[in-house]
Image 1 (cartoon, helix red, strand yellow):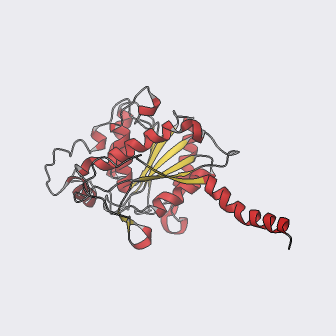
Image 2 (cartoon, rainbow, N blue to C red):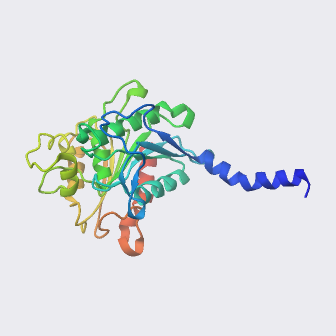
Image 3 (cartoon, rainbow, N blue to C red):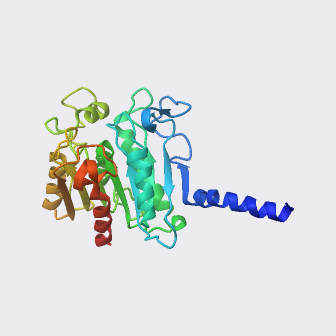
Length: 301
């Protein structure tokens, strides 16, 4: 085989990798040492099913849509895991790929878990990472060909709590590069409240500690922090969710409506908890949430 044919075959073999390399990229969240660092670990600790148990460095994985399908919209994805693991595959990368395939740039946030052994002020750190992530997305709006006024957040379970916290505590700044507030939020079986009557006890304990009278309870009860500047929200929950009661989503939606903020709440008869994309044979109509969310985003813009 002559050299020219060998070169052509080599390029053909490499071309899918080049396409994939252009479509998905991983970036450090911070250019230098991440804030609040107490002790560093050399690499992530990975558990069963690829779940991350300890995070060495916070990162963003960016899924770029096909330019011919790109809508200019973007979503920051916060996987769940009770604030003690990150279910980064079925509540992160699988979700990002689907939205990217549908024209939305999707960014998976590998945020630091609130581990007091690794972090100072551990209760602040997931939210600080989320704020840094959405600012980084807007700072890259031109390069990534997205509209910096159409950048939303999506979260599952404890990641839904993180997404809701970003929605109510992110500062709305006219300077796009400093704007921490998402333009919309998608909250899937989210932990909304730290109220012990309805919260997910594991998430509360990991984030706030053992004390039942934590001064941070109201701050992290996101339904109490809503105002007229809070972003529109799309919420999904199931009545048979035994881990996080549906009352979490109900309270958030009711308070958004009280302040005149656009909200859409889907309560399904079955679905349970932690299903990610969902399977219609197992999770019933709850598995339709992704298509419903896509229509909702299109209706917003």
